[in-house]
Image 1: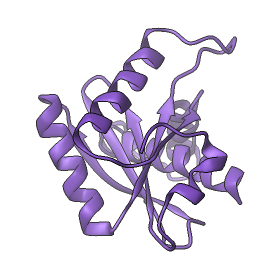
Image 2: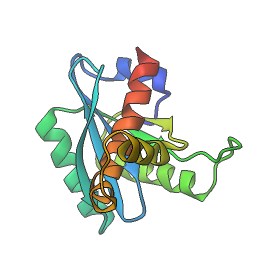
Image 3: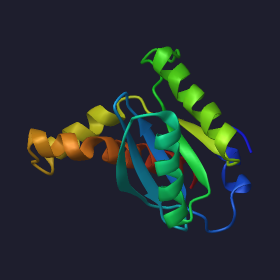
Image 4: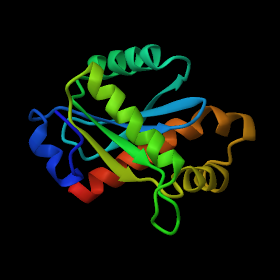
Length: 153
């Protein structure tokens, strides 16, 4: 497959196959997964980044256990809509994934996802700073994936 527009993602996937969402950080990758109807995103895991091949193997193992067939990767677009080095890094990650596995990948504008999740965890869940650090990346991945799913719905 290849990188596809978000609207094309459902047509590129097998019926009832979940989708995985990623929040790519410098040190970690937050991972979320949808249900089989692709209506609800849930935080799944946190991958501590080491080497790309090891990170990819861990991601593929998570996808296999859930039967996931595609990816939605958060694209950290600047507030003015331009793409900077972090967007280039996300696009390079997608290209490298495609070299290892043939699957559809779409991007979703993730502006302010981590900030929104942090606010929610502070205001609504009243979590400590240490606990937020443990869950923010996978919760941000769920936020990204849920935004994409809502757009598709």
